[in-house]
Image (cartoon, rainbow, N blue to C red; front, side, top):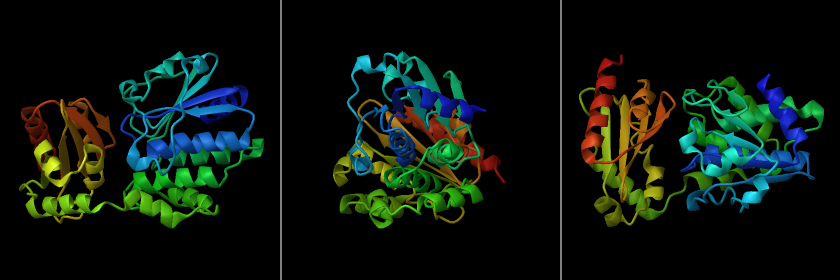
Length: 314
């Protein structure tokens, strides 16, 4: 029902502006820009914009548009891959005539005139492929650029098809996308190649990480450590999976210090961790979440809560 409403809304509106969450990952960019490419290819006469901050590590995927305020007047606004409104990049999302939410995270904040949430989907990019296939009979069509972007989003959110969220449908939709002749090698290089300084910091992490008796690994990247290796906060996000193959680990958390806050990246191999993230200005998936704390004392409290989750998980 929601898909049909979204398809009709896109067909009926001449101006469409697409948002996604702050601090975007490949799925946020992939679903946002993949949807834009899909709409522009299917309806060349429509005005379609994508807004948000450009992130240097992901500009190889796409560049955001400069959207003047007056464009929002009479427009359809679509927000991709964003569970709650405070995380939407560009607060003008509510100034259009109609608002649609497309997301695969557990619902923590219902918003929009139409809300399509599929927690069974591996990624919001997978949902955009589903939308495209649903609308094929109405003349919608993917192209090489949409396929490239949506494939990047699926690959990013499934950890190259390793995460439990990967399903038969995920592989089927990925198969539909690779029918298009985009450069997959270049795409993987853009997503996963890292500079020497980042790899050297990953070596430091592997040498110094500690695993608690309950299976929790805590990594603290202080401003001093980041400065020593000349790695930016944004670049440090590439390191979240560096300890993922440690035997006996149930969950791990990265604390990444900034000037006035500490970013938190939490991952799990089975224990549900998004409830803990929700207690600390965050949220996400049961096995992959983010949060924000404002002191190392608060960071230690979060780690203690994760320790309890790991201790209780069998």
